[in-house]
Image 1 (cartoon, rainbow, N blue to C red):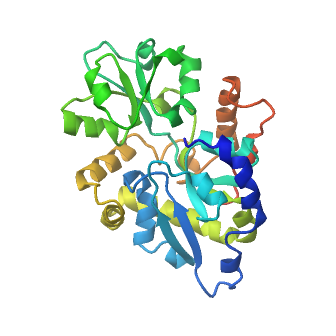
Image 2: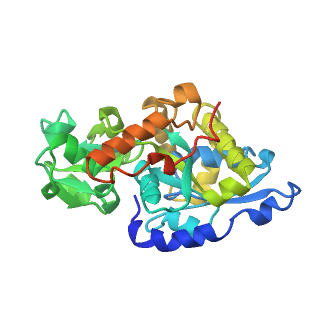
Image 3: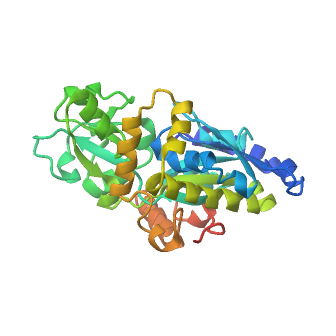
Length: 332
């Protein structure tokens, strides 16, 4: 999760001032609506649905001219939205969306393409670690974003303490050097990388399969775009859902080609195993997506997440989670 609190109040005024899509909407549909979509990291399989929809023309056939703006270290998607550098963007986790709501930033989640947050904790094999609870008292390497996201949940559920935190800078060398340590990661990324590069198969715990209730991989849209061009938002949501179907269960080659074009460091084996992990763990098609289709969200699930975070003191009891999202663009 990116650091939002120092900037969102100032940027909210910018976002509310004008519509990012007015000039596109004013064309009466004669020209495609331009949607610059910011991702939260460098091009990878976890963004495969967007790239597949772009490669297969799903956006174009619905009247959209979509340009994917690749993320990376230090990229702040809400800041890009607020500054009108992009029209839509990716919300990595539910905390990002709720933080925006708490700060009064006029941006909402309009779809959630990961029903399960892919965050994991990894431990060394042969250390007697068979559950997350066994990590109590052990050093855990966490990024700054994770300390403000799932860490409060871990502390509340398992009794972890801040003394366990060690700085994670997206370099696994400190984890490999300390067999007592655990490290955060994505189920579709770091476990495979460790096994491939270090020959070590870690013990992996997916937080979502242990009660962590958040959505992930959400599409964020400004209230101004939702109000002035809801057809474009709906078209983007529907095209992306089809992109995920094609990427996971059809021919992923078109999407992979665009991913590797944007991120030449990405390799085909990493893409292939990540896609398999997304299917195996049900990141996209589980939970609400079983009945509501890919991208589905529900009031009940958001309420559960909010209640959990509020009970941990992350948000005030007065915060209404409905300020963070809208369901108007969802449905099979």
